[in-house]
Amino acid sequence: MSKSELAKLLQMCSKSSTVELTNLPKWLQDCLEKGMTDPYRQMIIPKFIMANTYFDASDVPLTSQLLKMVMKRARTGKYGNINTPFLLHAMDGLSPFIMLDLNEDQVALLNDEQDLLNNAFLVSVADLCGQQNKLKVSIPDEANKFMLMLKRFVNLLFPVFSDMCPPFQITVKGHPSAEGILT
Image 1 (cartoon, helix red, strand yellow):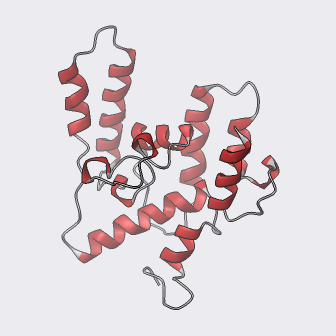
Image 2 (cartoon, one colour):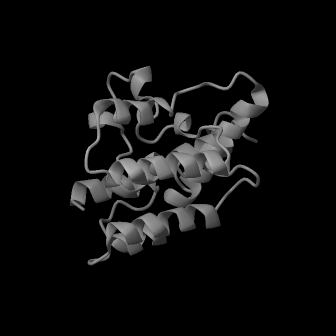
């Protein structure tokens, strides 16, 4: 990890800007150790997210897309283009829209299909588009479903970055001049 990326990550974790790996969350320190393989990272990240939640009964849908985003540290989505956000890319990167309303069986089915595509010798464009089309951006139309989406997002921010993460702080505790969204 480059020093600039580490500094940005420490800022996201709201830690000191001194560039030291010991200031990162424990799971990330484990993943960045030399010799750690991608399968190990894919195993440790979901365990850490599931073990560290802020809200009860708001489980994060641990799809392979979300785990890949966390593992590869692709928080800004497609090409890091934050100047011209498109609804098309709303589920790429760190976004509340990646918190789909899926049960455990649906998540397992999506992950199994993604594993099959990853391990296939021949994959058509239609196969890839079909998998991508299963994950559609949707804005909940009921207040309780919208709050569940936000709580799931907070349950992702809390273990991945820490409770000092600025988006976590604003969502839960609010801006200093206002109350939090979820208080």
